[in-house]
Image (cartoon, rainbow, N blue to C red; front, side, top):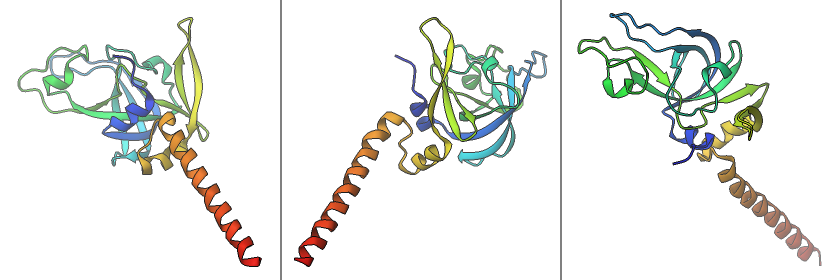
Length: 191
């Protein structure tokens, strides 16, 4: 199994938000609260779902993510595909490096980014960027698309650029064909 594309991550996410990273919170391993390291994000826009205000996103999952916690800079904005978890549910905490919750653990909702996947998009102005792995093991930002175009793709549910290109090409061809047919009819009526 390979790494999921950002388009696949967006398509399968429960919620998608544009958010600004406010802080990186340390884990809490006290007896009363087992909480993993988390990033506090201010939601500035919900693209899918209805999240508002500040949310906590778990850091440090045990599989590849295109944006590791240290890549998500305080004050910067990103598009985050999210899945909600409850720290009282052992199925949700598996792999979070906090151990299993106690039987009477209180419910505590957080979110996780996709793992074994492209996990976010950097928002710089109106442009979105993926964080791509280079051949030497480093990282480089690569333009993905404009935020306004991503919002447009939500209507068609075609989040992956490679899936969207054939649809866009078909629409352009149909528009050109429509214009040519109208032009030909206008010429035929003049003769």
